[in-house]
Image 1: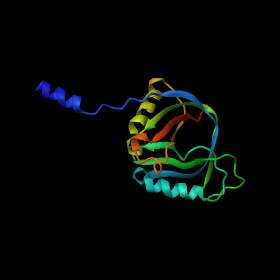
Image 2: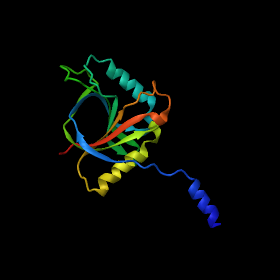
Image 3: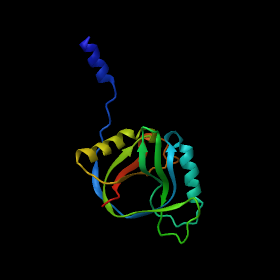
Amino acid sequence: MIENLKKVIESKPKAPVFEVKTDIFAPKMYLATKHNGLEMNKVTGEFFAENYGKIASQKAKFGNGMPSALYYVWDVDNGTTDMAVAMPLEEKPTDINDGFELIEIAESKCIYIDYYGSYADMEPAHTTLNNYLIDNKLEGEYVAIEEYVTDPASEPNPNKWLTKITYVNLKQ
């Protein structure tokens, strides 16, 4: 009986181990569509494609960074999130059309993980970062930034998709 239990336990995939790194987040500006109280089940590939399309249609001067999502609240109990779909800017626009916001994040301490894999499987990386904040008693008001470094249209293998997940302290 114990041998069978041991086999079952050993056959289960091990939880991924992520290296949490610390750094200084360089100041960044984003052009974004912000969504408060958004139902989590609506945060889909189609949702991102629609919003990135809207942002790209603006006559802004985009920077070299990659498409990103900024999560301010992830409320599991209510199944909602306050978040922004964003593109980094090279320079501040002179005017912003209705429905868009300029988000500026100042230089700040941050922690991050270079996550490789499917977007649907990022939860353990976020859990690792959250636990790091708790274990190291790092208090503050954090925004979780997912920067989608690898374009799935050019790399079909999800195991090679790099998402830089950064937690930036907004209150420093």
